[in-house]
Length: 134
Image (cartoon, rainbow, N blue to C red; front, side):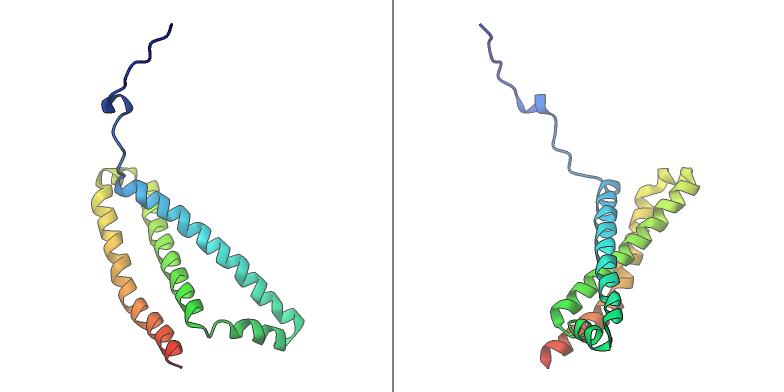
């Protein structure tokens, strides 16, 4: 007869809480998928030109909506993050010694990302707010 042994917490290992590089990798993949999904939508709404100006104008009229403006803001955030993180990945690929400095590099790129988002947020969310006030 088999005897089931009781396992302690240490037998399962610790919970991995993540590292900057892991979160960077995950966000890079998520933003890449988001940009690709937008690209498909962009191709479809641009293809509406083939059905005439009225069809195109009806489709683009949907962009004068505060919710769509928030989605556009999300797209800009995704493109900005994806491009800056891609630049960081490229630097590390070309200069492998930079791996030793990944934490300061990640902090620098995050700082650039956040500082760049400040005026973008002010402008884009201001436009969404103006549409909401109409």
